Length: 221
Ligand code: B1M
Image (cartoon, rainbow, N blue to C red; front, side):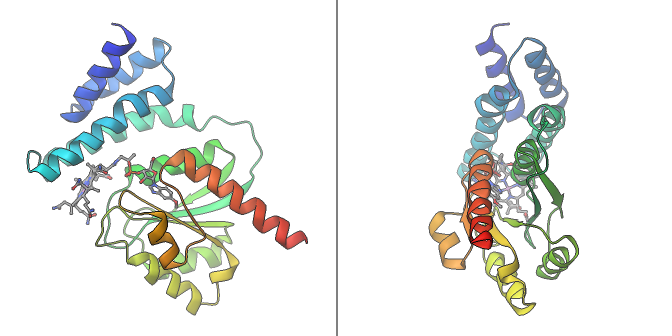
């Protein structure tokens, strides 16, 4: 199978949520020498974008989204150690979670993998994380960065609720706050008063390093 055939097959099998074939093709792609990034950005993620587009058009329903999401998650399990391969020392601590009311976690998990790959220690609080749980995690883990993911327009307002809870607990200025997720924009991040926003996992790492550098420079000034 050529490189393009494999990527196209992986895209098709992810789109229809064929988990076993997605696993086989992911393994085959790696043994054929395709990098994990190629499998991710040229097949798996575009397939999920198409799933979303079909859902919006009414051609796909929740079960189709669910099986496609599961197929993608299986591939991510294989790619995780390769994407997160790093000899680097820990450069900072990140606490991440998907906000209350929201069960999407593939995007958050990918951000976590990239953070780990860049040398961050990541504490993942999972999905449907309440403001209280975020507050308690900041007290317990004292992270450099706190990340909120939201994937629904209806759950994005939880960013503000989380920020309010942190402010009330006197912790807002103790931590850098980053936000992201499919419907989130820089403008929305500014409105809720987050310190940083990124559109994808790679950009999240770049932004996190930049914010951390700035904060450490200020602390040492
Ligand atoms: Co849902 N879903 N879903 N879904 N789903 C979306 C998000 C949707 C856009 C589909 C669509 O209509 N086009 C739509 C939201 C519309 C909106 O609000 N604007 C939607 C909907 C409506 C719903 C339900 C309400 C459907 C229903 O029940 N009627 C329901 C909600 C359930 C709930 O949460 N309460 C629902 C359910 C589900 C499933 C459970 C079936 C499944 C989730 C499985 C899982 O995550 N374990 C699912 C899926 C798979 C999707 C789509 C198809 C794929 C999401 C995904 O994994 N993308 C999605 C369509 C789409 O996104 N186009 C959709 C791939 C992933 C790598 O990208 O998630 O964007 P993404 O993550 C990126 C960036 O956002 C960024 O980096 C990530 C990696 O590059 N990022 C950050 C993420 N977090 C970040 C944090 C940062 C920085 C960057 O800093 C802290």
